[in-house]
Length: 181
Image (cartoon, rainbow, N blue to C red; front, side, top):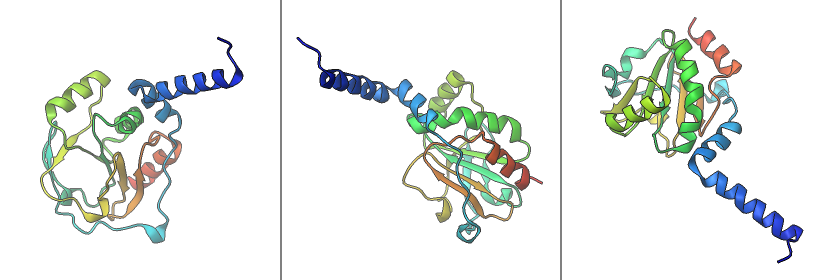
């Protein structure tokens, strides 16, 4: 069988496609193409209206969203089975490690604690994780995950990012420094 350029190109395409579909490689490729998220324009920043949002702490205390007003908040909706979620978690862990006393972090999932605990142990994550007890504010509703929001002290959504991102960027760190002053 003679190998032509077309056959070699098709073979290379199939190998690349296979690698992108293989979960560990898929996460790696997503991580490579993830950029720092952009900020909402001031005129497009929505204000959270329903602050009576109850969250059940899985590895932390329960929280009512009303208790975090006047504090900057980082909210991530995610799941252990989601490759884009897995891709951005290392950058979030670095951010959480450095800002956990200055910014309120809420990692929200529909999964049970046993599943989350195994995932956290495997990857050495320690995010404060919650299940929802009541409906979320309509401004945070999303049909996709990951969905991540950064909210200012006055309740305005500064960052509204759907999909994977590099959260441990200079731009995001500068934003959090400014919001936590």
